[in-house]
Amino acid sequence: MDLKSLLMDRFGRDLKLAYSEPVPPLIGQILQRRTHRRYAARPVADDLIDLLIAAALSASAKSDFQQASIIKLMDPAKRKAIAAHFPSMPWIGTSPAFLVFCGDARRLERIGTMRIHPRRNGDLEAFLNATVDAALVMQTFILAAEEVGLGCCPISVIRNEMTTVARELSLPDGVFPVAGLCVGYPAAAGYISMRLPPVVTVHTDVYDDSNLEGEIDAYDRRRAARHVTPREAQRNPDKFGYADFYGWSEDKARQAAEPEGASFAAFVRAHGFCFEE
Ligand SMILES: Cc1cc2nc3c(=O)[nH]c(=O)nc-3n(C[C@H](O)[C@H](O)[C@H](O)COP(=O)(O)O)c2cc1C
Image (cartoon, rainbow, N blue to C red; front, side):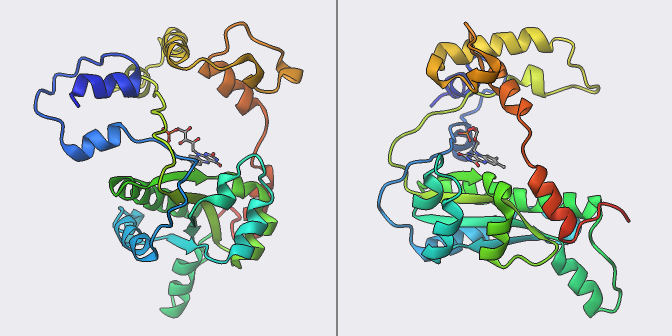
């Protein structure tokens, strides 16, 4: 596929990039990537998962501290116990494979103790470093999985049910999920989710969002032209009413207006992170 079409699919407009060489295959693949939530019955071989994990663990790691851990969730009873909390996301219980990517501040703390340089690893820096490491490992896994024809869906909602997740996965203090990940062979082609244009997300030399409102309005229209949200799918109409034009920004503003994550914050504060020195 030519670059112009790839960028039209991803951004909904011609970015007019000056790049004129053929698009390298991996970059073409990334430009077309998408989340998959429905999977064929075909199982995913465990040796393939292990290969993808080895690739994922090749991601960059802050200070070489390597503060990511992956839990392969193989026990159907544990999977069921977690999935039962999320009936609106049935893919959590039904994907052929499920992994949990964790930030792991515990291992570095244990290594400090082993080498007799003990130090708590529970401040904001530790939390952020471990989170970033886990996120990079997960995204590297996703790209590797997509390269072999698999589809994935990250699952951060598991963080809303930490009592169950921590119990089922025996998570010790200092280890927390960044996200679960459904993995399987896609049941359908899926679709590319249009991204904000680089004029919004890329800045040169200095941060500048002076054109944000106009650009967001234009993005909303481009997205709606490709995929209109049906009236019945508008989020929380009891609270927000029905909008005549329901674009991405209206949907995200409504979503963000509902607080999420308070229970996770309480969990990490009680399990190894004080966010202070
Ligand atoms: C950290 C993270 C957490 C996510 N959590 C969920 C989730 O709990 N449930 C879900 O269905 N999708 C989840 N997603 C998938 C996003 O909704 C998806 O990536 C986004 O809509 C963009 O679509 P795309 O990946 O197809 O481009 C998550 C994605 C990320 C990166």
